[in-house]
Image (cartoon, rainbow, N blue to C red; front, side, top):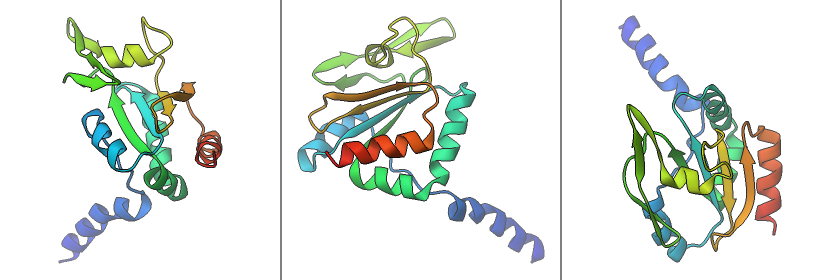
Length: 155
């Protein structure tokens, strides 16, 4: 019984410590924007990027930031090198580009200023009409992200 209690405690501890970020997909975006237009945050990352992992962990720990993002923005977490499905975005079709054992999605290249190899993590913030309002390569410190999102939401 004691082992079961410890096991259950360890299983539920992350639920109390981390907030739950609502993430969407590009295919859901058009429907969501028609129903309730909001600014869009696109976070482009890779599974091998240590900065991406640290950033994601820290983001989910900040309950106020997660609440702000969930209530006021659509958030798309986009894995640039593992997402293989075709994506339609802003009237264009984007595909995965395989390269031996790896590859990259055309959409990650299209959204990046460095067309040959994006810098990860990459944050792109679009207004409700899908116009670019902010672009950030590399680590996005939480205080700067909060400041930027507050500024955008108050526009």
